[in-house]
Every structure is written in C-alpha cells, then in structure tokens.
Image (cartoon, rainbow, N blue to C red; front, top):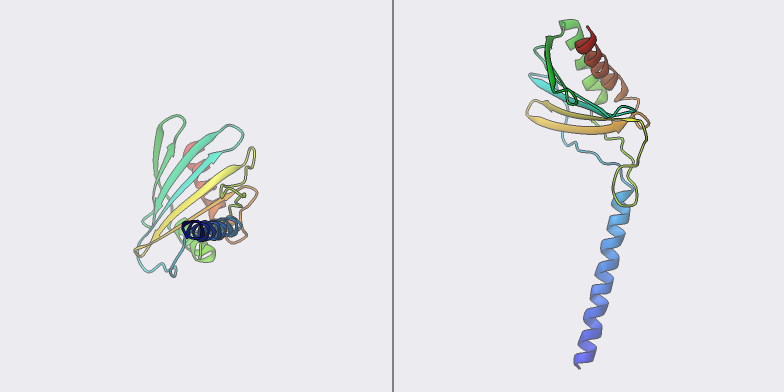
Length: 165
C-alpha cells in the first residue's frame, strides 16, 4: 500500500514538474513588456530614459517632464547636466508618446528567459509616468519597433544636445 501511494505521489510530482517546465518554455518565447491601461496626456508626464552599453560601454540617463525640465546624467563620469527644452520639442515628444503607446518592450528572450545578447548595441530603457499610470519598455538597436523608434531617437538627440550643445 505504501508503495502504491509513493508511486502515485511520484507521478503527481512528475506531471506537475512537466507542466511547470512547459509554462517556462512558453513564457520565454513572449517578449517582455510592462504596460496596462490606456495612455493619455491630459496632465503631467515624465520620461526616465536610459541608454547603456554600446562599443564604449557608456551609460547616459535623462529625465524629462512635461514642463520642459531636463536632467541628464553621465553615469560613467558622474556628471549631471540640467536644461530646458522648447514648447515645440515638448509637443513633438507628446506626439511620439501617443504614437508609441502602448509601450511594448522589444527584447527577444532566450530559452532561459534572459534578453538575447546584441554585441555593441545600446540597450534603451524607458520608464514613463502619465496621469498616474506607469509604463516601461526596453529595446536594443537591433530590436526597436517602428512605433518606439521616433521617441528613442528624440531622447538620443536630447542627450547629444545637452552634452555637446
């Protein structure tokens, strides 16, 4: 009797393990994305943008709010820059936020559920707060979607303008 109970328990554990492994394999094929809800620009928004990696292993971050206040940090040299952008630039970025919504991460995951390696590519991370909602997305140079590219390009231009004038 004890032997039969042990065999039944072993079968249950085996089936449970197989189901768990199947779930992991299935979720490893789905792109990582964090986004629930609708995007709206009725009041305030902030963008936290981070660009890391590349050939030089450079890390730059930028925080931008709807009032035009921009703070850029050079993570390698520990330098902080502050600037204000024009209303025209704010309007352009708001249009790009609407175009990119819903913000979908474009990271391809390997079998272990980790992002695929892209040598010498930049990794872009966007954390966006709009009307009390939070959105996040990640992409590399090789995986940026057409809807996310204009926003990431604008953030890169702002980084360059802030550092190099």
